[in-house]
Image 1 (cartoon, one colour):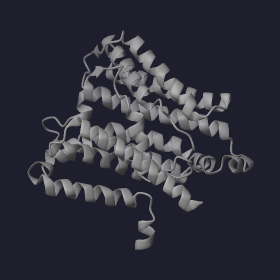
Image 2 (spheres, helix red, strand yellow):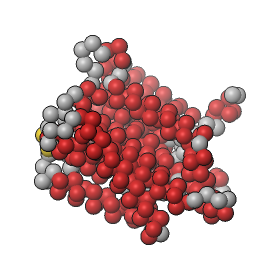
Image 3 (tube, helix red, strand yellow):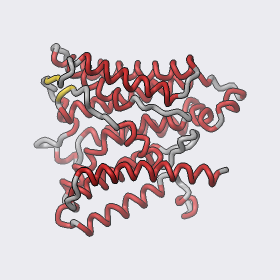
Image 4 (cartoon, helix red, strand yellow):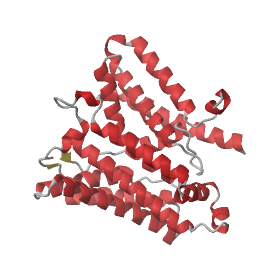
Length: 318
C-alpha cells in the first residue's frame, strides 16, 4: 500500500490525531502520563465507549442512529445483577442481560421498518422506555450483588500481569476484528453498506432492506449487551441511572473515526481510535488538573467538531 492509499484510509486521520494529542499531554505531564498504569487505565476506560461505538458503527453505516444504547447498557447491568442476586451463575446472568439487549435492538429495528418512522424518533422513544424499565426492575435503586468473578473482566489481578491489559480490552479488540471481518467479507456486511449508501438502489438490486435493518439493530443491541456486561464488571452493581450520554460519546467516536451520519461510510478501527482519542483527552485533562466542568465542555466540543467534520465530508463528496 502506497502513502496516498494509506492517507485515504478513514482511520488514518483519527490515528494521527490520537498520536498528536497523546504526545502533547505526554510533554505536558511526563511524570504521570507516561506511566504504564496510566496507559492501562486509559485502555480500560475506553472499553465501554469503544464497544458501544462498534455497535453504533453498524447502525450508522446502515444510515440509521440508535439513541437507546446507553439505556440498553444500563438495563443490561440491572438484568444481570438481578439474576446474580437471585442465585444465577455468572454465565446465565450475562446471557440474560445480553439476550434482553439483543431483543431490544431487534424491536428497534422492527419499529423502524414496520412504522416507517425515522430511527432518531424511534430510538429516542425506546431510550426513555428502557431507562424507565431499568429503574422499575431495580426499584429505582442500585442492585448490589456478588459478581462471582465478573469483575476480573476489567481488572488485572495477581498473576495476570502477563496480559498487559484487562481481558475486557482484549475481548473488545477481538469483537472489533470479528465485526470488521463480517462487514468486509460477508453478504450481510455488503448489504448493510449498500442500504446505507442508497436504500432505493439496494432495494432494486434485490436486497431485503427490512431484514437487513432488523438484523443490524439486533446485532447493535447484542453489542450493547456486551458493553453492559463490561459496565457491570466495572461497577459491580446494577445501576439503572448508568451510561447517560453514552450514545452521544459512541456517535462522536464513530464520526471522528470516519463514519458518516448519512450512511454508507464507517470504519470499526476508526471508531475505536475515536473512542480512544476522547479517553486520552479526558485523562490528559485530569492529569493537568482541569476541573470536571472544563472536561465536559471539551467533550461537548469534540462532539460538535465531529458533526462539523461529517458535514464537511458531505459537502466535499457532493
